[in-house]
Amino acid sequence: MSIFLVEGGRRLEGTVRTHGAKNSVLPILAATILGRGESVIRNCPELSDVTASLAILEHLGCKTAREGDTVRVDASSLSRCDVPDNLMREMRSSVIFLGAILGRMGEAVLSAPGGCELGPRPIDLHLSSIRALGGRVDETGGALRCTGNHIAGTDIVLSIPSVGATENTMLAAVAAQGVTTITNAAREPEIVDLQVFLRAMGADVRGAGSSMITIRGGLPLHGAEHTVMGDRIVAATYLAAAAAAGGEIEVTGADCRHLSTVTAVLSQAGCRIHSDDNRIELTRSGPLRGVSPVRTAPYPGFPTDAQAPLMAALTTAAGTSVFVENIFESRYRHVDELARMGASIRVEGRVAVVFGVERLRAAAVRAADLRGGAALVVAALGAEGRSTISGLHHVDRGYQDLDGALRSLGADIVRLEEDV
Ligand SMILES: CC(=O)N[C@H]1[C@@H](OP(=O)(O)OP(=O)(O)OC[C@H]2O[C@@H](n3ccc(=O)[nH]c3=O)[C@H](O)[C@@H]2O)O[C@H](CO)[C@@H](O)[C@@H]1O
Ligand SMILES: C=C(OP(=O)(O)O)C(=O)O
Image 1 (cartoon, rainbow, N blue to C red):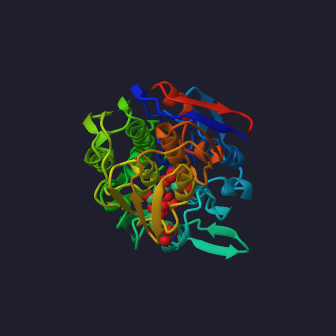
Image 2 (cartoon, rainbow, N blue to C red):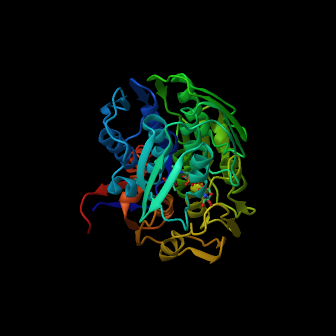
Image 3 (cartoon, rainbow, N blue to C red):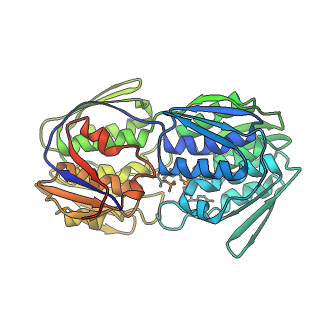
C-alpha cells in the first residue's frame, strides 16, 4: 500500500508535459491484434491499465516489449481467444478486447469488465452492435461468449454516444465483410486517435470525430506505428492543481482545443488562461470565484472525467458553484473525502452544489476511484497543512508519476510505499 503525503500551500510554477492518453492507448493496444505483424506504439504511458492490457495481449499469444515510452506488440500469431476473469476485472477497457478478438479469431470469451465504480455501467450497446454485425452472444453465469466467423457490415444506430461501444463496434467492423455505419457515434478525440491507428494498419475508416463513422471492413490489416495523443484529462488535472494551489504553469503535450470547456470554467473562476496548439498557460494570482453550472456531457461537452478535479479546485472559490453529472449516476464519491478537508458540498442525485469556503484543512483521505483520487491531490495541494491520500491503486490506473510531475512544478508531495 502506498500513500501520498502532501504539504499544501505551495504555489506551482513551471512547465509540465502531459503523458499519452489512457483512454486512447487502451483501445489502440486492443486494436494491435487485428494486424498480423508488429505494431509500435509511442508515447505509451506507464499505467496499471496499460500493464493489464499488455498482460491480456501476452495471454492471447502476442509478444510485447517496452522500452521507455515505446511499446512493441507482435500479433503475428494468436493462440487464444479468452480474457481471464482477473484481467477483465482490472479495468473497464478490458471489454474493448471483445470486438478485436472476435474480429481476429471469430470467437471471444470474456466476463464482466471492472474499472471505476461510477454507478451502473452496462455493456448492452456493445453487445447489440456485435449482434447487429451477425455475431452470436451467449451470456451465462457472468461469462460472455461471442462467436461469429462471418460477421458482416451493417448500419448501427447507438441510442447513446457511448465511447466504449463506438470503439468496440469499430474494432469488430474493420474485420467484418462490407460497409458498417455507426450513427450517433461518440465524438471524443480518443476515437479519432483510434481511427488514425486503424487507418495506419490498412483499415478503411472515416468520420471519427463526427457522429457518423463509416467502416469498409474485411481489408487485410498489418502492424503499424503510432504516437498516442496527449491525455486531456491529465492536462485538466494539472490545470486544476494550479488553480487550487495558485501559481503560474504551462501544460504541454495535450491539444488545447480538446480542453476548451475545461479552460472556459477555469477562466470564469478567475484564472488567466492563454493557450495555443499543444500548450496551455494558467495563472492564478487572486482568489477564485464560483462559476455558472458545469454540466458534464459527451464530447465536445464538459468531460465527466474532469468533474472531480475541477470541483476540488472550486471548493475554495468565493460563492457557489453547481455541478450536474449527466454521464454517470454515482460520480461524487470524492465529496465525502473533500468534506473531511472542510469543503462544503451538498449532493442531491446528479447535482452537487459547492459552497466555497475560505480554506481547506489537511486531512487523511482515501481515493475511491481514479478521478476522485486526483481530486483529493488537487485539494490537498491547496489545503493548509499535511494531508495523506491512500487508495493510490485507483490513481495509478490513469496517472503516470503524478507526484513527480507535481514536484517538478514545486509541489511538496511524496509517495511513501508503506501506509502510516
Ligand atoms: C476507457 C475509457 O475510454 N473510458 C471512458 C469512457 O468510458 P465508457 O466507454 O465506459 O463510457 P460510455 O461512453 O460507454 O458511457 C456513457 C454512458 O452510456 C451508458 N452506456 C454505455 C454503454 C452501454 O452499453 N450502455 C450504456 O447505457 C453508460 O452507463 C454511461 O451513462 O467514456 C466515459 C465517458 O466519457 C469516460 O468517463 C471514461 O473515462
Ligand atoms: C472512469 C475512467 O476510466 P474507466 O472507464 O477505465 O473506468 C476514467 O478514465 O476516468
